[in-house]
Length: 116
Length: 113
Image (cartoon, rainbow over all chains, first blue to last red; front, side, top):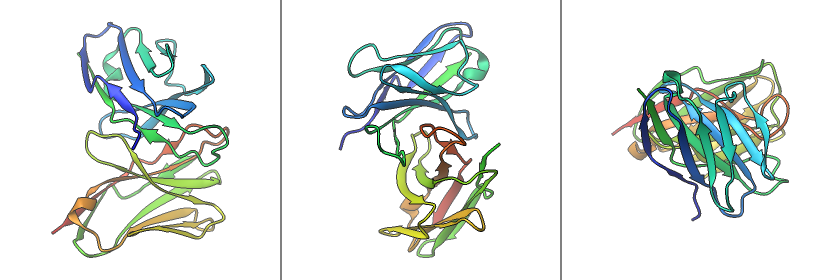
């Protein structure tokens, strides 16, 4: 069964460093998302991406964050200058072609980001 | 602003019994609600979706209800097993737009053998 994959599974970085989290969505899906989950808290939406551009973003997704689909398979989240409070699990998700009104999303296993 | 709330952080239940988890929503009327399972250190896995005009949905040992009067969805696992132990998340659409999901905090279910 196709699945969303994410690398790395765990990333440790120093405050102020740039990190890139990588995702390979399910191949025939057209909507892509990033969510994060701080330990013990809710899964929170960051950004959605469709047709090679951001379609929606939350207040969390400020200028420090960017997303890119550099080729036909990868979807990346970049944090330019990490802060301690960026430590969280970051989940990539994808959903099928437009017209799926009810928006079932398929999540990857997550990348645990630890900022020291 | 809209809220999706799962007021029970944890639920312990004996194997074989029915687990019932609650999701309440406030300040909006979602067109649907979804339920996900999340295991520790893993991403959410979609289980069931119920639309606002559906009273009940079933999938194997799972049943979801949607009560627009009570503004509540109930998630039931019948004949629960230790393997059902996980955190269960309720999610719904945003106030406007359709693509991101808004999640509740989840209820951690422990099924004791």
